[in-house]
Length: 284
Image (cartoon, rainbow, N blue to C red; front, side, top):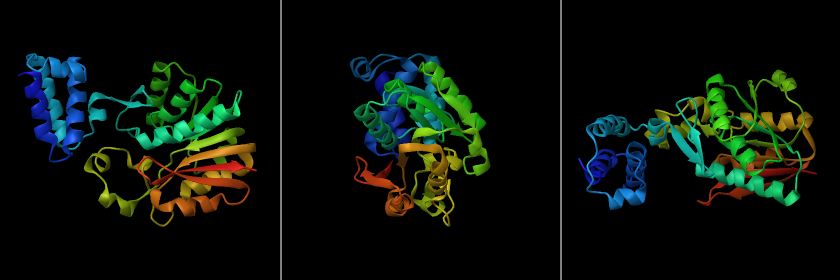
């Protein structure tokens, strides 16, 4: 089997699930992982034969891909802000929209020339948010919390591999009695669960069947539960003139902003797709 044959086999197997462009990207990524050939080398070496061992691995991967399993879980890693992260079924796959949230915060920190800024990130997952902040803004002192010990183990691996130090804590943020374990912060950032369960019907199989639901979904009757908790937490744990950066449900922008209308200057920001995806609340 040649590189070209392998790529065509991958695309043919997953085109019923993905559009052609995404299928091609997945095929390219998988072949790079299996063969070590970059996208350019896959084109230049398209007639090169691949070993039987790689063909066997490829067959196994195609089977998993055809069932909707995300390529990131199959190869065990994902990229976020040009950094590599270990991911598995205990962690969400990092999204481009979340990169926008982190970039917005980093620009804010640089514009205000923060020194030793104390940041709390709520919902560690793979650790992509706090690790990226620490990597691109070394002056930050970052604490990150998650309810899942399994997710935190992954996050710790990622922090080590990316050469940063994060203060990880395992706790249930919705339990206000656990807030006493946390101190005072200048910045709060979070991409909490915000998808209503009734919205699941419109979501892709590769998300529903494989990514952790506790990190995605909230009950329909209280979709802002995490944002309410963050608002209440900030009453006693956000330093004067602090700021809050949150990823939000595109359909609940106004409702989320309403929570912070007192004592904050609130800004709703759209993502690259033109959807209301972020809220920044600046204390005054």
